[in-house]
Amino acid sequence: MAGSEESTGYPVLLRGADAEAFVVDGEEVAPPLPGMEAALDPRTEAQLRSQRAREVFEAQHEAGPWMDDYWDLLEEGYTWRQAVYMLWEAQPPDRRRPRYQNELATQVLGLTTDRVVSQWKAENPAMAARIARLTVSALAKARSRIIAALIESASDPNPRSHSDRKMALQMTGDYVDTQNVQVGPIQDLSRMSTEDLAAMAQLPETVADGNGGD
Image 1 (tube, rainbow, N blue to C red):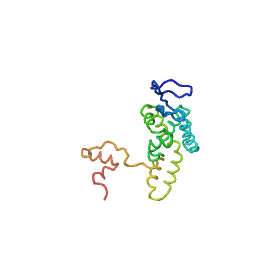
Image 2 (cartoon, helix red, strand yellow; image 1 turned 180 degrees about the horizontal axis):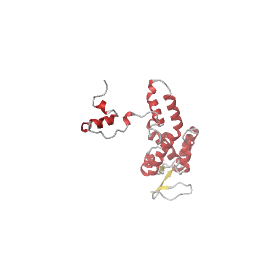
Image 3 (cartoon, one colour; image 1 turned 60 degrees about the vertical axis):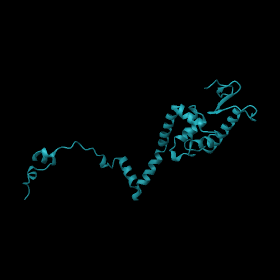
Image 4 (cartoon, one colour; image 1 turned 120 degrees about the vertical axis):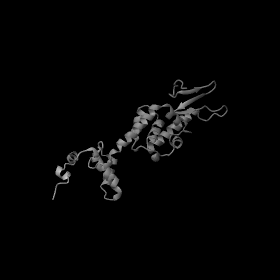
């Protein structure tokens, strides 16, 4: 239930009679309980936590192969946390670091839980479509390395490289898998005359009759 923008640029999420809760870079921030006010107000604390986590991430991954996609996502209007999550989600599951979504939220994004990440997934279909494009983009960017690795493996005479050689020759059109050859309709040869069978086999009729030869 989003509210209006305040002077800081952060929207009010909920309004109560005596308290407010805010969203800071995707994280819902509740006010402190009466008598338990923090040294920093919750919104400022959440802003600082987000800012610090972002600085750490960008410093550690400055030369990352997918940082161009990260900056593109920011330009498209996604928050830095959403951009990092989307890049993480676009990776094959066995290559994601951290491995699990809750670890990404708490260890990288500076969130206290991964609840808001689950909300992004459930409430933003456009995000899922963009993640799918990121996956294809990653494959396209790796195309030259993939082909180079295929060539190197296919050129290796080791029998273990047989499948790579087969794939490479299929890609160049030099190998056709006989299992994929299209076969026409099967005819009932028992109903055909000797002359027709000879014509199909391109044999002289005398050979087909058994009269050829010495």
